Image (tube, rainbow, N blue to C red; front, side, top):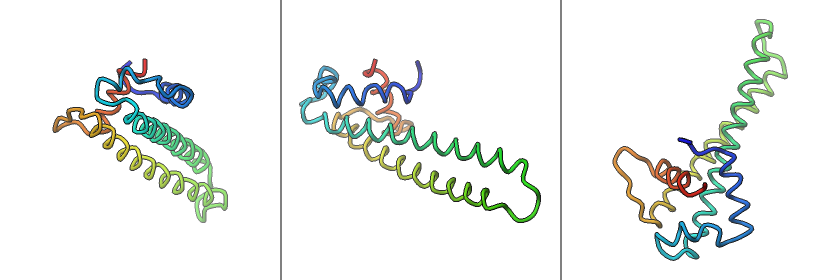
Length: 135
């Protein structure tokens, strides 16, 4: 498993919400686990939202591609215009979700004092940490 998956984040989030001390063993190595829990929760929520919005963008783009393929040349139909509006809304939501994920990852990495190399972003470091600890 080389990449963080939506299912692993979706499984970890309710686990953390149901039992606040679910990841305390992983967090306690970096400081006060109780103080780090809200940061982990916000990181998981932001990562889940980023996964969902990326899926929405893909879904709308596929629908638009499928419907545009058979559209007659000329003025676009009302349906295609609505799909384009839906696509722009989904893209905007994905950008907002990615920004929130970036902020949450940066806060999480700073709080845990994880090492960031020049070639790695805080998102990559936080995802790597989650990948090793969610199992």
